[in-house]
Length: 337
Image (tube, rainbow, N blue to C red; front, side):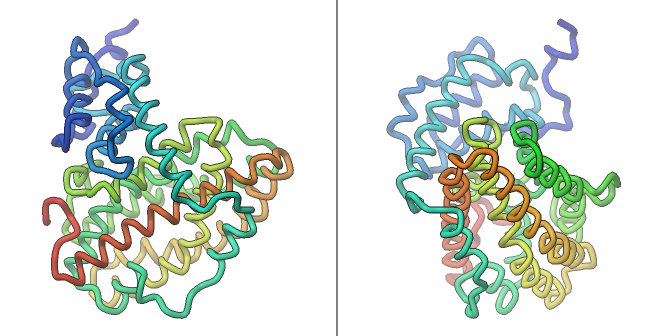
């Protein structure tokens, strides 16, 4: 084993976040001190499945599969004790999602609703930002979304070796666009970092983790949960398709918000890019990725629908939080900018 496989992760990795309860505190302690025992997995059984403590603990464990944390050895990624705890946290979260998302739906039922663009957008975050949002709201929204967009498309790649034929070819084509079609300056995560710079935000990966409420962490954890488990490949495809189907109309409203608020050219460009690109991706993901997967594995239809419905459930929870806080004149962040 070489020194590079045992050293702590380089300083390009984010720092561990401030704990929000006993689970996340014990995870942080175990990550920094390999001799410290991980939390008892039984502690996950009574944790709030949508709460700050569980989702920060889960986020920390998932981040070991991305860039890791400063001062945490790369080898902790597959630590058996941490994996046992992660499994218990995942079960708690997944059980709640299955109980709260619509059950027994078909793909047509799940996506039929998503394809109908409502006339009234007053209940959506993008609609609020387009019409009534202030620059401070846009900055908060970008800070929260950075936890997703600065790793956008990364967990979706994990599904590619689990697909074949039409589904695989179309998924690769979409991901090729997400990663800049071979051009580093066009990678969508890089485009979002430029948006953040226009808004005067810190562009470091994971910088706003401490500021993000559980509702925002849950959305990022969802795609990591689906991506890391082959058994949830159908759910990951459903999640990915849901994002692509809903992206273009929402991006159009967000691009209008950026122009109205004069947020900057990079801020406008990020959402303008998604209006065009995701309109094409939406067709590919429905007609080739979903249709191809269902042709190969028809038994996964329920999982695909569940992946989309779980995504909508968590996005609605975050949207409700943002709109409630903003309409009351409060910050949606745990630590205001």
